[in-house]
Length: 364
Image (cartoon, rainbow, N blue to C red; front, side, top):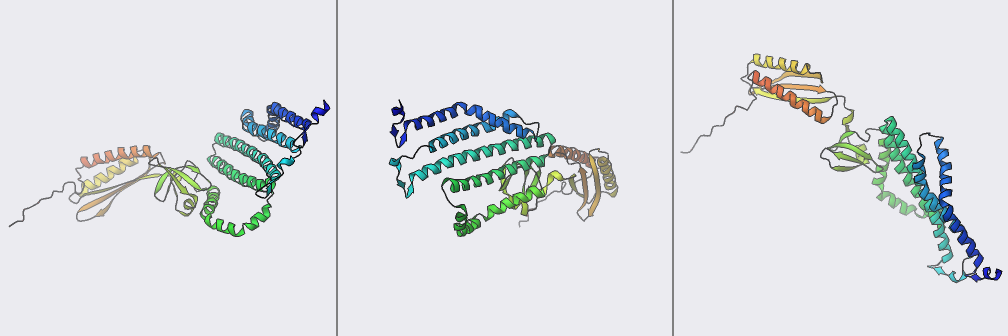
């Protein structure tokens, strides 16, 4: 029997293949149990920071990457114990096949490990977003989304460097040195993207606006739906979806309409110059009384502003609280109708409304 297990295939005895196979099978059988065990310990460590953590969500996020990492780790460690077959000792484009296989094996481990870290970041962001939702902190919510994306980019870059350095033996320091001139050219080509990235940090720390704010920038009006690493997404009043680079959001004049303390309405009436002063005086006083009696109006002014040879101008301004625009338009409509009623009561005619045009035949 020993002779059977000592038979050599591809420079390795049969018993080594058997042990590696058994180790991989055990890994497959116990991957779910071991992964839940590790996830449970990580959950208990995270629960010390916040008692409201949902264990099922935590385990669900980490289970798949933990299982794949476990199987990949066991398989790679087991296969590494085998002697590399001499029949495959050849070079591929000047690189030994053994080095290529080892590089791919390390790459798999690094990729799965980075995947696991990204899942942890996703869970932490879900936890912080839930806390922000409960507390009503919109600023905290958008900061969580921003830094989640930022950390994912950083970890992705670190993962690429780990693959190059640990997987394929590149010296990262020399790689950066060798890319000095190329890096300068790349930096110039990516100058706008870098400026937008810096602008995104300025937006989050200076907080000129937040997600959910109604803003107006560069003749674009709408509600901010997302602030990303490069751009800000705005849902316009026409329900279109506009992407504005963050650099423009920082360099341009941004009117944050959500921070207004009042909404203002203006009415400019041009009335005929034949209107008597008594009618104008009565109309102005009635307009003031009409507006000031309204509980939803904070302040109002009504004045006879201009007198000319063809018309008189009456300026009417009033302010309401920062109510939704639809409600504000309903108030404007109601007051406009009431003011038109006062014009009819005092028989005041809008300038130009009674104008007639007479055409005469000037022919011979």
